[in-house]
Amino acid sequence: MNELTTNELTVNDLHLDYGTGATANPILKGVSMHLQKGEVVALLGPSGSGKTTLLRAVAGLESPKQGVIAIGERNVYDGAKNFELAAEHRNLGLVFQSYALWPHKTVFENVAYGLKLRKMGATEIKDKVADVLKNLGLGHLAERYPHQLSGGQQQRVAIARALVYNPPVILLDEPLSNLDAKLREEARAFLRELIVRLGLSALMVTHDQAEAMAISDRILLLNNGKIEQQGTPQSMYETPETLFTAEFMGSNNKLPAKVVGRDGNRVQLDVNGARLTGTARGAAGGEPTTIIRVEEVKISATPVENAIEMPLLTCMYLGDRFECLFKSPDSTEAGLRAYSKYKLEPGRYWLQMPVEKLWVF
Image (cartoon, rainbow, N blue to C red):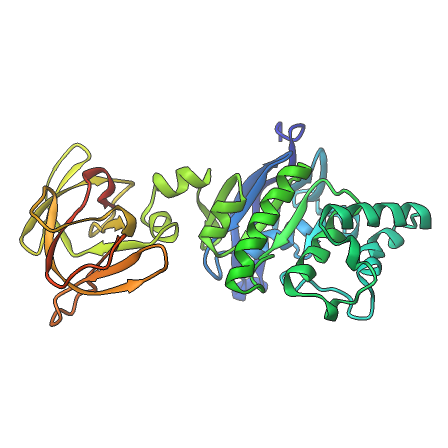
């Protein structure tokens, strides 16, 4: 625990089960992590991976089985000592997925609620609430009720309520999931700007890898109650250590490839009779899996190296580009996807796959 002096939050070897005895269902299986001052860490993973349970355990809303949780230099949970500090004494800001605003209270009253519980004076409450509402662009909405606000405004009120008493860490449970796609993009930019401007330390749960990459400084990818991989958004996307990470962090093509030779990390592949070279990544167990990111496939009308020839089936317009699907109409295989700036004419094309980007796990 020697990192406590520099970390706002430290979790060591946390285990948590639902149920007891023979029927116990392990949810967290020895998770360790830290959050430094001014850092945003995203807990990313599929449903059931344990990310929300971890957040709730940090908040004091779930009781772990063993391990240690510390906020700054203060332990708030220690399994070995059978010690657990109540949620209301952990001084953490929490933004729920549903926002959980009081419908009968104004924006001002919602944000002030936590300060009133702390027996703060009326003048100080007024000043603190006014300050945080101004910071979040909500000053003109102080007297409105939640039903009079848009989804994005409600989300900002929930964030204001979490920030108003200046907690060392704010916990965000899928804070953008209730917003429509357009508003989510705007809110993503707003949330990242706010975090940077105020120097916040935040732990955020999300199942959206694009959201995690845009907002966070570091990502913890959870898989079945354990941390599969952690690192910067760029390292997680560009240098995945496992097939699970590679598949979760991007949009991929999976090739029906057979390994026919290997020289160091260079792998010789047979894809329906075509010979390709790929790059071995991670620890391959059992049958190797070959993938390439959709954006890494280069489309050529003439023969090129490290490519397979396929007919164009269709192109879909995405606004800034076309997503093209290459597949024989009578084939039962998934086909290959690639992006093009222009709509392609019908015909056969060579799909080039850079050796370093054709990954074999």
